[in-house]
Length: 226
Image (cartoon, helix red, strand yellow):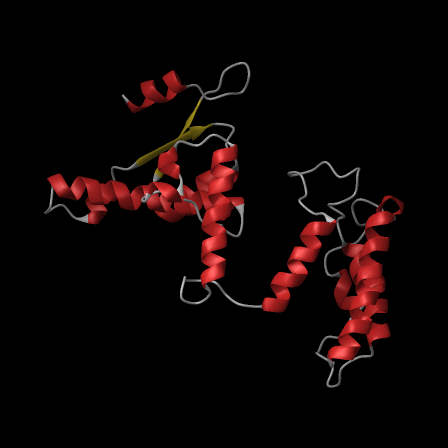
């Protein structure tokens, strides 16, 4: 595919996306398929030659769309709100075109700097103390791939910090001895990813009761720690 073909097919994809978003109400929210359905519709091995574009688009409607759960559908109310919009789609297109991997500042300075700046924006919008912002010098957030990954990274960071802190006063104690004493606390209604993070991080989790409004109160946490 050269630049001119990309321009042509790109316009077609934009039209397809716009039609999909506009007419999404006409589709079922959840699919009516059985596990393994797609193997009956697509070849078991990769094609030796590229398929024509028109056939690719036919495959999308014939094989993929019947198995899609349409998170952008107005009647989709599961899991959590779907984050998609025309501006975000355009942003994804630009990001995919640039195609860099910003795993460090040197790998792509703009990626790191935009991430830290915008996470400070979010922190300020939700009223986080300045210690949680990059501008504080020691704080700041990073973007993770999912909420579950974020919980795991937070737990591992807290574990590392706690071990480092305890070894200042007990320099000869081994890490595994500290690990056996670490306890994490969460609401009994917390998402399963919290318990999974504890399992992966070797941190025992205690599930605490909630009040009549399903909230975990500070005094309950304080009593559990004491």
